[in-house]
Amino acid sequence: MSSPTRVRAEAGTGPRPAGRLPAAVTWVGLVALGLLLLPVVGLLQRAPWSALPSILGESEVLEALRVSLIVSLAAAAACIVLGLPLALVLARRRLRFPRIVRAVVMLPMVLPPVVAGTALLFALGRRGLVGQRLDSWFGVSLPFTTAGSVVAAAFVALPFFVVTVEAALRQAGDGLDEAAATLGAGAWATMAHVTLPTIRPALAVGTALAWARALGEFGATLTFAGSFPGRTRTLPLETYLALERDPEAAVAISLVLMAVALAVLVTLRDRWMPR
Amino acid sequence: MTVSFDGRVVRPGWKLQVDGLDIGEGVTAVIGANGTGKTTLGRAVAGLDRLASGRLEIAGAVADDPAAGVFVPAHRRRVAMVFQDLRLFGHLRVIDNVAFGLRRAGAGRAGARRQAAALLERVGVDSAAWQRRPAALSGGQRQRVAVARALAPEPEVLIVDEPLASVDSSGRASLRALIDGSPARHTLLITHDPVDVATLAERVVVLDGAAVASRGSAAEVTASPGCEWAASFLGANVVPGRAHGTSVTTGTGLVLTVASEADGPVYVTFPAHAVTLHHDRPGGSARNAWQAELERVDLDGERARVHLAGPLAVRADITRRSADELELRPGLTVWASLKATELTVVT
Image (cartoon, rainbow over all chains, first blue to last red; front, side):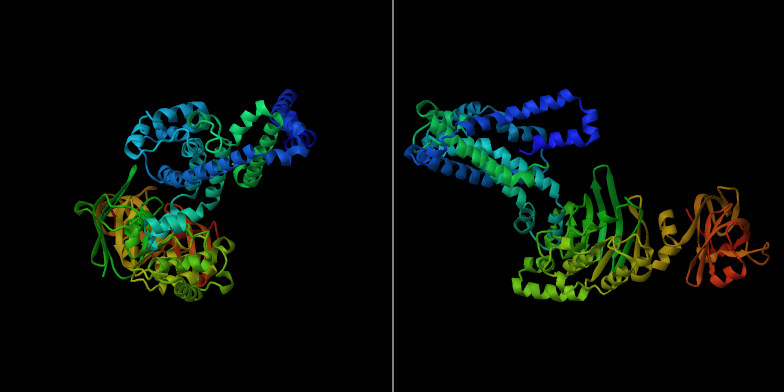
């Protein structure tokens, strides 16, 4: 939120930005900032502050909150368990087709969530590539279950964790790993005592980003897991439904989600923003 | 007990070829210009780089032999390394950095810390620093921590890669004492400091052009350094020229008479102390004499190192008293002379 004041301060005090930057650019930049700010203001302006506690105490909201927490935390855990080895492989192994592998890893970041959900349905659905085997061999069916929501959320959140951790691993280099090896540390000991402790901040940042992304997931979850109260209806889905039934409730839940997002950003600002 | 290295290490666009190098007990200095493979040699012994072909034995056991499919990974070799960039663990306290190797060898936390403390005391790291992170220490102190950390697991071979590069001269002497008193059976000292070689090394290995150019005792290597870089490094003068029998014509046309016959392009090397200086043309037995312009005189205790320009850019070491008596000053023209028997011809 400090950006507008900073822009004005620089335009006023520093001769360089004011002299070299056409005024129109500054103005358009401020318009863009306004565009980003407007929805927040709109939400705050419509916020039913006095009714907030009772709205958030409604059973549907609480149930959606419970599902959201379970799904997002499980997805974040899945991101750590699966993403950490992937990040290590990407950073330390020489890959055959590094560009293609990296593109695959980044794909969920740019894919429309609905497309992601559709793709998951055809891969893991009851008649999907892997899904039909899961069904016939283990009797496991993912679509329209809480586990399915977790899969959808983990799918879209995974790149955030992997990209963050891989960057930190690359920056740290393997010099410390080599030093550990000359001191008698095998591969596991090196990973546990040197590699991971060295990138601990990045692990925290990656987990938080992945969790925040999982918490806000909507499109892939809806497509792949549906919207069943108590099972797959998360806070974003509840918000969307509430918009027709009770707009005030939608605003209230939105405020909660926005507060969480802001909290994550503020917590990570020092580590994440400078890059 | 030796470390015997016979093989090649290949890296993209580059290779190091070492033929039958036996590194005995004690301190062996590895010298050579940048990019000649000194660090690669150390890394291969430590197990951080693999041999592409050949064989590496450490204390009688094969550590690397690609043809036989043997490669002992770094953590199973008793080879510790003090890295040029130190590579201390930033997330661990100083004492736990030193205890790291002991812990990996199975020591308990308390026992490892006790031993680490004793080592830190021995290398002279102030006990107030033991509970700090390495980043809070001065460069010299960090260096000592790195040495203590490498020595802690009692390695068979200690590799020290340019350890003194970032320490001031007072710190160097005590670090030298540390390396000199190292309990490791073999110490491989990769260095750019002539004093290291003079004071520590029982043997010197010279690398040039990604191969061993010379090896032997410091005196042997100084007498035949194998490359211009090492020759000048070890204090000798190096003059390129073309030999015809016992005459060597230098680039400026001055002909030097040498004691051994050779033909074709050569380097003539001679120690700085072999050059004598005179005001008048010297008589006597010296075969080589030429007029030179005195460029500069560096005084170092009782020694004066005189830099000469003119047909040959050489250094002459004389006593300070002689320098005073000759009233040497920059710009003066003097006669320099050299006995042919002092000249070594390197082809």
